[in-house]
Length: 115
Length: 115
Image 1 (cartoon, rainbow over the protein chains, first blue to last red):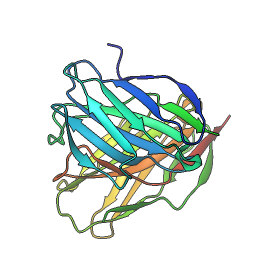
Image 2 (image 1 turned 180 degrees about the vertical axis):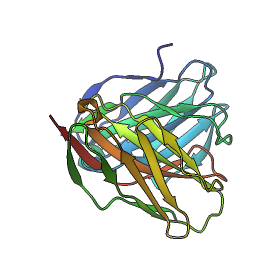
Image 3 (image 1 turned 30 degrees about the vertical axis):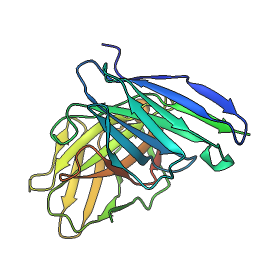
């Protein structure tokens, strides 16, 4: 089992550009959540996808959007990049988002640097 | 709103000794879960231990145990017989049962195990 895989591992973008990050959940998992972890901080919840719909959203602007595909993989898109978007972006997968007795598994993240 | 506070940015412990990491949280929820996650340099968040708020008994996982004080909203992690592989960032996290699989993380404690 490959676990949660994220791509790319590192990315450098210019301010104002758009970026797409990808996540493949652990086998058998159907829910994907995205987190932003700024340097020296804990991860902050961006949003969560289940059955190809955004189910929950944290306090992030509309520049952050996502998508979930029928195979449960997910993308995180960020438009009009700001320097403050530089962070580690973590993906977590779990089974059925409302079932809190299941363990969430995290990927190794994508390090985004905006210059 | 839910907040998680870790007041120890950095800690160190001698190999084979015991160390305790502190965490406090604030919530008006009655049904929730608490977690400790480990983030080594590989960046992948790894679940260390989990506590259901309705359980009075403190959770234990091998060398890891918690002291859960619900009234005080305190959730500390004790690591016994510290090993070099325990060196990592440790994050305390909270999850509401009502929202499922959406974590609120603290700012983390950097733990160094000294040989």
